[in-house]
Length: 348
Image (cartoon, rainbow, N blue to C red):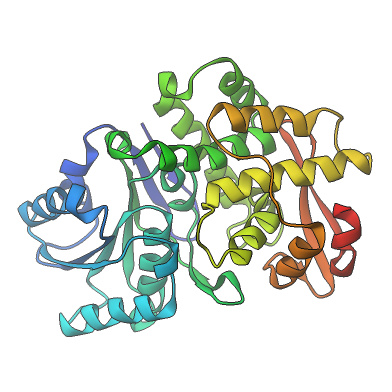
């Protein structure tokens, strides 16, 4: 399966089992023989897939280097990216060379940010190995790192040159990480694809996994093409994220994964939407039931006051206003703008 994302610089997304072993062949269609390539990956992923990708790139005639970092959201900080800069500089990378982001969402965000800012921008290729990265974060060009004040507060829009999705990598995922990705899969059903949501309710996602990945990616492709810089429609992709990021921040980005936090955020916002008459009654219960089916939590011990305070630096604020993403019903999302100071009242 393949599709083209028509942004300012169009790029291909390829979805195929066994694609990792053809990474070099696909990159050779875009980059000159002899170009340097830096594989950026984490300490969990590189031992699983790093040498396979490196061998494929070498066979295609590239000069291959690698840079790894300790796995986990705690590494998603500027000091880690500085290490990437050092590796790129010491190995004499130029704008003719490129980066391969091999791993999950943390890797893709940081490697993409390094590529966006080193030499004011070099090319990069996304090779997502987690479900969350395959269905969401590898597409659309959002890159960045966390700060102590909040998640992804430093970053850049930098579209990849190519996205290579190999569902075989998911076989190596522990159940926890697969469930984490399901938080974003369910999000797509909530905001744009009622049929997908209903199929997830009726069937086991693993029975038609490639189709599900393709549908999520295609949904994101269409939204990104319409709004590459998140000025309008692309905000819909943030359903559950305002509160999800707040929960992650309250835990110093430990103990609660991104997909888990987003799932809880979707439930809380839908409950609030129902109370204010903006969301169809029963929506929150359906979302919670589906999250539970795939092993995700639906509740938090955080109080509305704690969540509202932690969300005060959310990127979805605009002046004194906050853009909340709510559902009118399953498959129909909308942007609901409120004064940021009213978030606590809305949640209560």
